[in-house]
Length: 478
Ligand code: AMP
Ligand code: MG
Image (cartoon, rainbow, N blue to C red; front, side, top):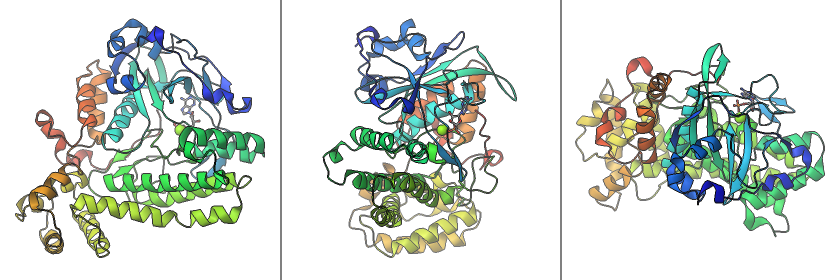
């Protein structure tokens, strides 16, 4: 459809007034489209030809409202680094309407009632990171918000120095956060809490709508989804960096991309977020933080469900997590089925990678072509003995596999990505974009969409991260 044929709805506005604040987006000055996502356009019934029009650029800059749009910011609270903040909310994201159950949001569209001291803007570097990374997560088959468009501008925004403002038109089947529930529970507004739970069920778990004990099952779903998401992040080597409860999706999606990173060399203790001094959100802590955050949600849901029932579900979290994780690692290693002894093999492998400082993504991709010749794998680490020891056990385990070597390799190449968007790659794309050259943004977008394909023209991005860029931390300022 053409943009002017679309009709937007705003289902979140049916919730009580306290859940949101009606506010209009403030367009960026001299804004221009950097990239638009054709796949997401199709999901929204937008004709691909529309993406090249001036109207689309105006729409993605918050300067053109489509029929039915009633724009607003959402209110939420959250535990930030363990401390409760009773009111956060969309300080720089403005909801602009829903199509096909996908809610569109402009991030960086100006101040709202929830901006506190912030300017409501987002800069180019953080917008590029969010735009590309949500596509990369999707390409890896991990649930995430998506994005329709990335806008650049000449609008000056101050962050320690003057930078250019940008905007991402983000899209998600849900923007409800754990912190949204915490907001109403803390205020003891239980009617609103219940309305929000009904909304979240209708939005993300509609099969529960008629269940007798629906809020209990709702929590169980969120526990299961969160456990799965944590397992996926660990298996692919993704460090989110700011797992505050306001950045946790009730639908189990990866949301709010900040100082995140993919691991370069495997490091269980890696901290991507420069401000996370003590590593609360380090790579290895993520599954436990997922559980901590679910406990905060559990407290918020206590007015709706008996607490012993909630506790019972919570008790299953680590089992759910471990099951998902072992399942994913079994696939990464190319085994037909998981066996109990595999846990030791996985632990042995991770210890070996940590000790030898081996590039996590490159290791699994190289292993995907393993045919008994160890040369390529041995090249990945300085010392051969630890790798040889592990391969000795791996060879033995492969003998228990029923699939052929070719079958195993083919499956592993579809499981272990050739490319992940590491920070040094994103930084190079950002540096070029700051100069007005968006070719690398385009290239990384193409890679991100299918990280399992060979993309021979982009071969250098599949190599180990250059030493000077390895395992660097990023600042939260965005
Ligand atoms: P984040 O760390 O991006 O998840 O943001 C945490 C909170 O700060 C959320 O309520 C954001 O909306 C808000 N926030 C972050 N940056 C800004 C900004 N530049 N202006 C207004 N609010 C902001
Ligand atoms: Mg956030």
